[in-house]
Image (cartoon, rainbow, N blue to C red; front, side, top):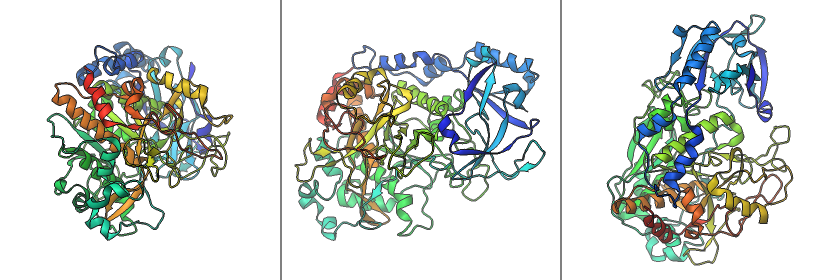
Length: 637
């Protein structure tokens, strides 16, 4: 036997043992089987994404991806044989449809040579069954990814009827609650002039007369972004092109807010609505809203939809509304990925009941989705924007790596994923840093906290800038904003540096890396983020019947996604494929972006990282120059 997984020392600080489980406790066990050909994934993705590759743009079909990565017969047979020899006979094994998960119920402590405890999270009081480490036979270790329950707190209590017993026979009480800090919601930040900062009435009724004058000082609108990045308007809608926006219930939009926004800034779009794709019971939540609560529910979707729809009009935009109300704290990126790629919820067994919602929903109620989990129900849009993220430390590496591989696979199929990098510089969402022992502090010192999936090398991570006060609007007017929010960026502690980024990061580390001993991963061997940036300050949006202003990387992600969707439309019109995974092309041609060289993203008692010539972990390669980007991508096969 060899130790297969051991708990991360920093995670230990967040959880404490409540009691040891009875060694005879029967647990529902899931073994994630190792997928095939993962070592070839990077090479295959680069073959269709590297601008120098003769196969650029020749994206794979879903069947080709499934066949390439499914677990091998040898892997499945080896695990079957081990379990059977251990007294867990084959007729008790349940293999998922896609072969990726093997499930059974058993007394697991002897099988995995471990001891299970009930753990409680210090801040949220969530309880989970887990162990400190577990072991498997050495010849089996190479065939499995991980075991649940294991070190990841993977067994979530589904209802009060779940019963666990301590070693002395005492029944253990369990609690259900969202993991504290689980989701770094990308909610845009409001102006500090009250809960809403309203535009003056003159700006509402006479906006077009002085838009250019105040773009750089007071308000940003779709027209401002077009001026700033050289983006045309009214390009024709193109069949086969698509832009997707992901939102998580109860965060949704009001149709009346769309029309208010369009009336002010994009009159021809009044009456337009996104295509609505409901995933796992997703719906438009509009109950009990008032001036105090409205922004929390409506702010993010309003921003995402209003700007993406305005920038790509008349191209259709898809709204992926994910999750029911009962599971609002649990619905995750994986639940969305399941819905657009059937191989993920079968071959990968992507979901983890600790971090992902479970459907049919085990929690009854009027807003509880009782249908089957959406699995490959919807087509993936060519570009997908998400303005939500996690702190990398809040999720286990195996979970993050599994999800990151899914972005690789969807990139192989021609989809671009754009994620906002976060709004708190080098700190946790809302502030705070890590002490060396893994505990959290107030942010006056400590270790930097990278975000996820910003560190995943297969997504486009978007930071945010603002227009320099007093500058003209055309390209070059951006600087890094740090007054109201601090654009997140840094270096992953999980993901290795991708080949396409090595040269850019090497130059940064040699010339500009700050000397903060022990506060960030300065090895030069890990993924840096963000990759790109765009304006994220003073965005005017319509929320609950009023025009208000917001800030953050949530503004940048849908903007960048919209520009890539426009480029896709032009490529499709020219008989070419979608751009797909764009990172290798952008890093090979940084001249198509406006380099940002002013500003910082402070935190943890430091100035954080600075915007410098070339790539940096604050604004990436820079902000879009649409004409140059379009010319480049149209020149590729």
